[in-house]
Amino acid sequence: MYDPKSMKAEEFICHEEIEETLAYAQAHKNDRALITSIIEKAKELKGLSHREASVLLACEEDDLNEQVCELAEQIKLDFYGNRIVMFAPLYLSNYCVNGCLYCPYHAKNKHIPRKKLTQEEVRAEVIALQDMGHKRLAIEAGEDPVNNPIEYILDCIKTIYSIHHKNGDIRRVNVNIAATTVENYRKLKEAGIGTYILFQETYHKESYEHLHPTGPKHNYAYHTEAMDRAMEGGIDDVGLGVLFGLELYRYEFAGLLMHAEHLEAVHGVGPHTISVPRVKHADDIDPGAFDNSISDDIFTKIIACIRVAVPYTGMIISTRESEEVRAKALRMGISQISGGSRTSVGGYTEEERPHDTEQFDVSDQRTLDEVVKWLMDSGFIPSFCTACYREGRTGDRFMQLCKSRQILNCCHPNALMTLQEYLEDYASPETKAVGEKLITAELEKIPNEKVRKLTIEHLAAIKEGSRDFRF
Image (cartoon, rainbow, N blue to C red; front, side, top):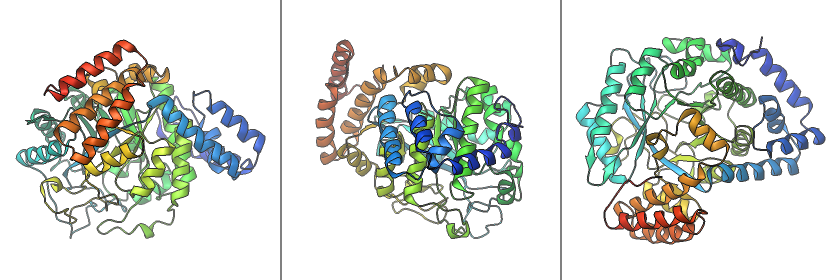
């Protein structure tokens, strides 16, 4: 029986409810009156149920689909403005005991070199990332209790935060590691992490168990209930995601929104972020082996429908996607992207991009500076801000500010100040020229005169060598 307040995976992600939802959406995919009423509800900026959003995803009326896309773009601007938060993944280890059929790190892959960074190698990777201009990392590691125990992850976090190189600092570490215990989530919280991210991969239990035949990840319930344990362990912000292409996308879409509804119902706080990765080619992995792949048009429609259904959540797209797809996705509601990413263990210290330990092929291979300039040329503000975490604006406090759209009052000036830091310390002359012009124009958009005046003072101080101002 479907119960969003249940703590049992198969009750808050209920297969029968998803099947009924998909049948309902299919039956009403051309019901213009119903679809129009759902769009009007979405305009209230309070979100949609998984069933309402599924009807929008199934909609076959071109003009109504266009309305959804336009609304998604407007909602993104209303909640997050034209800012795009920048981050980079940092792969610590590709040792893994799981048998996931879609991941090259699976235990039976004997020809991929196994590597685990020492603390000195972590330091070298972090300095390389700091020299690019990054301030926010998402650390990744395979599941291996011998090679990658929680103590190793904690040591790496401590190392990352300890490194102050020139004007570089990693100010926030987000963590994407396997489902673990409440006790271990408490340790991660104490280590000062930002968001705990865990992709469900697929919400379809039968498919999940087939795709994870061996290893601890085979346990569907333990994996699916991980976010509840993380929040019980004191982690305020959690990030959801599915790997689109493993199962039918409409099923995954409904399951993802049901998971968001569950977190809201139980903890009063929905997901801080939702990621939308797609299956991509990698060593020993052929995406053609999965017959549920989706077109770019469907992919961007999914993003738009998530944005109108969960307006408050941050949405993340990685360098799995090409420049062209990322450009479309940004208009549909994406608020965070990676730049200059390397998905191999130790990849940032290599002059040439290594491929032998990559988790997936990187489609967007531009440098961070190229991505920053591209964003600004496209009318966005690249933001390296981490202020909310460090000012305690997390969990329900962040959501209250976000849902009331008060978050813009601090995020917009913070974005400009962190962009100014990037321009001073890392940008090419061409990027710096574009950025200076953008900041001057964006200052006029700060509504509070006192905040605008203080921002101008801080920007001048940054040019003189000061760093790390925040509202």
